[in-house]
Image (cartoon, rainbow, N blue to C red; front, side, top):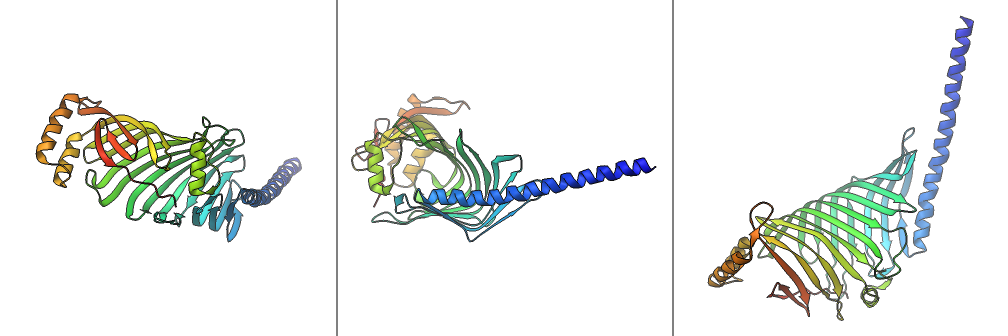
Length: 342
């Protein structure tokens, strides 16, 4: 009996020691996590990226580390005007054995903005809620996935968006040549409202998804000067897997985009369009095309069309921007929207 009691007390004592040791480890690591966030923010300031917060708390004992930031602000001073990101409340959590993966939650939403300049109106995007995952690694760079809900984008006109998935990837090292991939961005937008903006797509786009990879290093400085230097160094944007679906219209495309001497987009995109009849009908309904011309175009397009994966007529075509004009195949669509850099 005494031996059993002794063994029980010994086991209990060992358990207490182990728990105490783990608690001490957790507290030490919590301090290192907090100091690590501060050191990371300080390192970014040296690169002219100001990251600040009103308060930081560490919790989650015993099986997680949860970092809560209040009134977090990111101000990128590398370019002018400087983009800004504001997050009223950001929670990031990771397991004690896996600091490479962080679960993110912004329950009060996020807001991104870029001040207007010259002819360019202010740019703003606000999401009511956001959640995602951040993966970091010294050899693999960083990858961020976010799911945004109830978004309102504004660039001269208000564009509500039901939801969006966003993927951002950063290489472990900055680009050194125009061929090196830099920032990678993939976006999947759903239920985009376009009241009075597009005569072809109507008032709503069901889905718009695309992926872009910026080739070449984008320098700091004034936005127009930085874009000019990036262009002169051979920088381009690779567009991949563009998918658009809207009221029976479906389009897919890939291509390359660059900037011309006036810092306006130029490039070629190849893809396919399904539902071209809806485009012609919308153009006629909105007075952009005569019914007789639409009939001739419909006959010509029908001869070019082939059956798509779902059996519906599909046209393989090319879209290009050249000398400020947009072309769909041989057809001239009109002037391309200009980018106001300043």
